[in-house]
Image 1 (cartoon, rainbow over the protein chains, first blue to last red):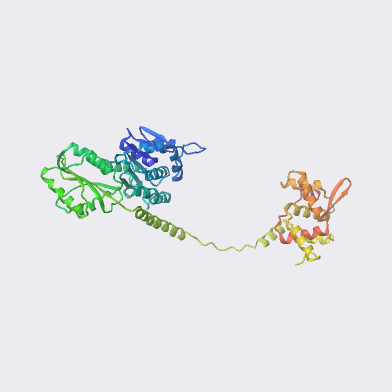
Image 2: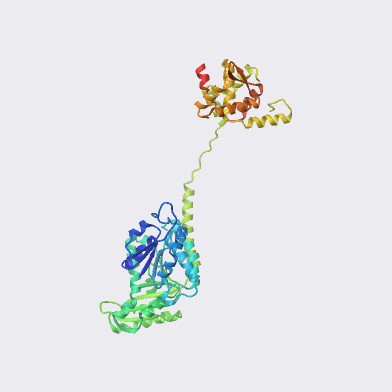
Length: 366
Length: 118
């Protein structure tokens, strides 16, 4: 079962499994747009009714959390949660969730939640989205990582969506497809003939419960080429690029059982980094070439992520500022003698101060 | 420039008094002067009608208050003539009006009564 928070999160959760997913939103309109088995409306106190979202304000999402906190903390146990970091509802509710989790003592391994966040592409998306994300990464996410009470954290990026100019639904489908390929690893192990290693469902759940960033990818594997080279050229473009691996997991599907020893090269690569991956090699006769599905767990200080975002955000702000300076036009200074103009107007109307003074003198009052 | 030929304290008082006058006070002083110049009698009811026509006030009490203020400051004199309270500018009022003309940016507006009378 998956859980989607906010507009973007709900769409992804519904796409992964609309039959069993739960979506949470502050807006009735948004809840009605998405197909889901359970819909939860988080309450915000609005005199206009809850027909509008949180309008990019995470504060509204945070306020709404109080009404659903107990239910959500129970619901997310052992599930995958989707949310965006740029908007109001997703960011606000997820922030509160992460902060609540980081304050807990010890979450049992199998109850840990996998968080999938969609990060904006700073070059193309609104400043509010980027600023909200910067606050999210530096605050709640940083606390959650220190707390160690989350499962894997998946950081999707909208970068590819803008670079490839994809419609949102199509891009979401890509994200879900990519995730499903990773989630299918234990199923494939069970489905195909096992040649070496073994990843069962328990191994996979344990791997998912590690509180690190998860970068997963899938590519056609050529045993003749160095693995490191293949890996770097096949990072998943839908995710933020990974840092050095802490743990790794891979499934190698080979069309010919004689290709089985190819996986040793992968083990050698990770051994150099001091990592012993969990792996499985299976025989998949439907393939024409070996297929590698790989996941790397890595850790990056949220501060570094924030710096990445901040530098891009600052660059675009600077560009905007330069543009606004270019557009600045110096207006010619107009010196208007207001007193003179008033006198002219008064004279034109036949009334002026001097005339009145003359009248007062004539009356003998001055 | 000394406007008032009294002692320094009196000058201060005069400046303070004139500085607090409003557009409606200015207009009354202006209309009273014009009326006196034209030989037309101008009374409190005329003041009320003119201020009302310009949308400055809707109540006679306000018009009376403006007139009483100016009378209390000795800028105008209210004389009971033929059952009417006619208004006349005093020398102090003339100096006040001169001060307002030179120092403040009040707008001249015509008196409906005087326009009809001329």
